[in-house]
Length: 118
Image (cartoon, rainbow, N blue to C red; front, side, top):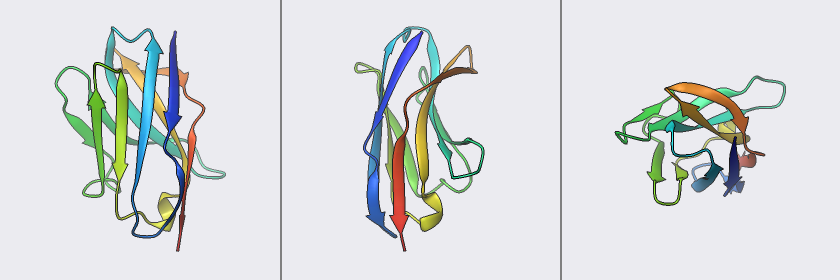
């Protein structure tokens, strides 16, 4: 079992920036990836970005490329998502997720709301 705690969401104007954090505790030693997903009202939860815990290689959905940066602090088992040039369509609840053996687990944090006003 792993516990994930997200923070850093909020209300920001279009063009602004936010930095999300997700701290993992519990079963962290065998994580292969940590990532961010988001869910808009009435929509399914979708992938935003991930980072390979061993190689530090990131991966992004197309809409995040060039605007979002994922990073990690392995000593703190924490992953960050720096979001810049935010758009109203980035408004969603952002969730953290971990993968083991490169397979996403079913463990989720409570999510953090990001609202971008136009």
